[in-house]
Structure formats: structure tokens, C-alpha cells
Length: 320
Image 1 (cartoon, rainbow, N blue to C red):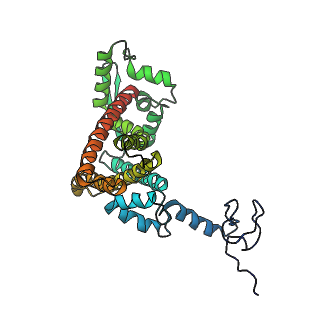
Image 2 (cartoon, one colour):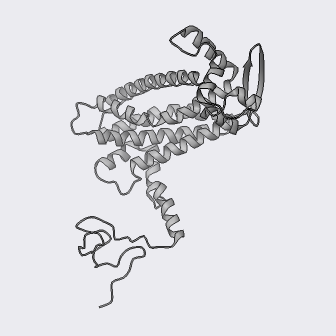
Image 3 (cartoon, one colour):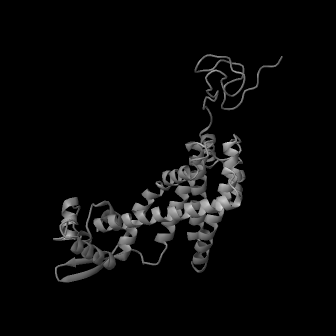
């Protein structure tokens, strides 16, 4: 009888598990579940596996994306019914889509025409100057290391408190004089629109992840009477839907200039259509029931989004 064949990167079959000592009869231990993989392989092989592990280029991505875009309910239903190995895991799909969305928005915003740098308006008493800041200088301003005045004058690193005093002037505190504070901050935002846009955009990246728990909670409330669905199911549906939103929105923003407006409008129409199909397939809702819930989800999500944007704008004004 010939010796057992060795599987590259895995321990020889019918040997002992390195973790618990049980006899191995495959790639995974039947007692503790540890893989027999010893991770001893060439570095190029490890790099290829890392790339495949990131986006699952072993065939799962090809099977997942068409369902995500055109049959989202079937994708969610497969996961709920236990047919999971054929698709990219929902959380990994969500994270990769979020990363691609942020990358596409970064490209879109920095691709907008504003020269090689961004202009900032500096107020020094009665004198107002408009100077151009490089991307690295804008990063220093956003991080709080320097103020616009120091960028204009070529001064070194500033302390956070000194920067706020220089920029805000006498109306530093909102509660002391809300009207003056708001008027002064709005004037600064209008005089430095590109800086304010970049400021809000930078912090908006950190809010995108909040859409996941918000949407999952909304699903839990809408389907609270359906006891067969658990919080995990709602999270899976939320991750798959938001992955679609991030991908289609990112692609729309990367469209060429003349087509960008039409692409963004098409994405805005496609998103609720996709959500309707998702609810029908994942939860078994009828056409009318899924339509009612889609409208409810859409309106509630828009309200929450507006609240987040208003809060983000207020936060951006505070940083000016």
C-alpha cells in the first residue's frame, strides 16, 4: 500500500493533530476543528493566498456579485438557509465594499478641479488674504498641527488651544453667544469652501460604519413580529445591502464627468429597487408588504442620514 499523499501546506493525512493529538482523517481535526495546515509554503504562495483571502478570488466573488446586484434576496436567503460556502462572507463583503467606497470617494473629491492645492482664506485683523495650501498642508490643518494662519505665514507646529483661539477669535464658545458663533463659523466656511468640504469629507468616512447598526436596528423593528428571524439575520441583510450601496455609489462617483450626474441618479433609483427585492427574497414578504417596508426604511434612513449630516456640519464648523 502506497504512503499517504501529502497536500502542500497541510500535514500528511492520517497523522496526529498538532493541537489535541487526535488522529487526522482530512484537512480538519474531527475533535477540535483545527486545520492541518502548517503554513509552511513559499512567500509568493502566501501572498497569493492573502489576496484570495481578501476578496475571495477563488470563485466566490464571481458567484456573489451578480446576486448582490440583481438577486439580493436570493443571496441573503442562501446565507440564512446555510448555503454559505459558495459566497463571500457578509462581513468581509461589507468591509471590502466600504473600503472601495471610501477610496472611490477620495479619488472623486480630489479629482475635482481646484488646482494643485486648495485655497484658504486667512483673516488677520482688517486684512484678508487668500493663499494656496498643498494637500500635505491641508492634512496638517485637519490634524490640528497647524492653523490656516500658520500655513500662510510659514510658522511651525501649533498647540491645539492656540489654533482654536487664532481661528475662532472672541466667539469661541457656542453657548455664550450662539448667534455670533454660528454667524462667524458660517462666514469662515463660506470663505474657505474647499477646506470645509475636505474637513466634512474626512470625518464622513468615520460615520459610514454607523450605517450598519442603524439599518440593522430598523430591520429589527420592522420585523419584530417575525420571531423566526434573529438579530444575526438582520445584520447579514444589512451588511449585504450596504455592500451593494457602497459599490454602486462608488462606481457612480467614478463615472466620467459628463456621465456622473446620470450615474448618480441611476444609483439613487437602483438602491430602493434593490432593497425591495432584498426584503422580498430574504424575509418572504409579499410585493405590497415589501414595498411598504421599503418606503418606511427609505424615509427613516433619510431622516437619520440628514441628522448625521447636520451633526457633521456642526462638528465641521466647530473645527474651523
